[in-house]
Image (cartoon, rainbow, N blue to C red):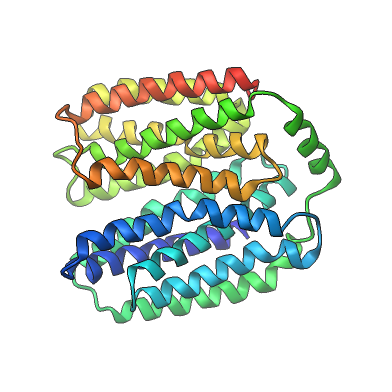
Length: 344
């Protein structure tokens, strides 16, 4: 299921980017459409997640299938929104992400993968956004949305066929871990720290730009982000959240010093994004009965990090300085949150 959700993630974000930059942005109220879409796509994931958490409590088969149905509904609304309105497009995006996110979190827990699957799911979105934007800039026909829509529907049908293997519920062992995790202290402190780190990561993603990020190197930068997010989950599962955060953010800080050179800049993007699945997994472990809230809480942080760039509140500091400071502050805040909550 994680593999299916990940491929759908590429297609959903690709369709959204294609529709926004190829259609809605060109309209007279395009500037407002960008804000409306991002609000619906990111800020609404938290209330959607809370609703799913409330309705999915317990192990009833029908209830536990609700995230999957939310993801499928999100796919259908995304396809419809590409031809109608950015609000519908954003709502579809939000429903898919929160449904697929909860499904991936559950499968990760059932397989005892310690967060590996979380990075695999969240990583492909950047690739989808890049490909969708590239298609819009090169005037690819809008009929391509129909082809992508057909592929997404086929993937949903395949997922419906396969989902019984992963929808029966968490194991008893996972339930025991659930109880012990909730009894640990420092949950609120950790949530605030993770939230702050994600806001900062989102802001840096909008604010940092380098002259070499054009053509094929732009694609290389996107691949670095994608691979970094995916690798971060595996690294944290192997060495722990604290060691992963300290090592990757320290290396990204050093790389940002010389990020005007493409090789160092690509390395900086790779290592800086490795903590994305780490922050999500930390919250999932802390609030195991609230996977929808944990996922949506951090996507709301992404929305807040987008706002300064949208309103033009940019610092005059160069990308090197912003990246170095962002890496240092993220390292400090995340380390404090992990240490205070004893989530190593």
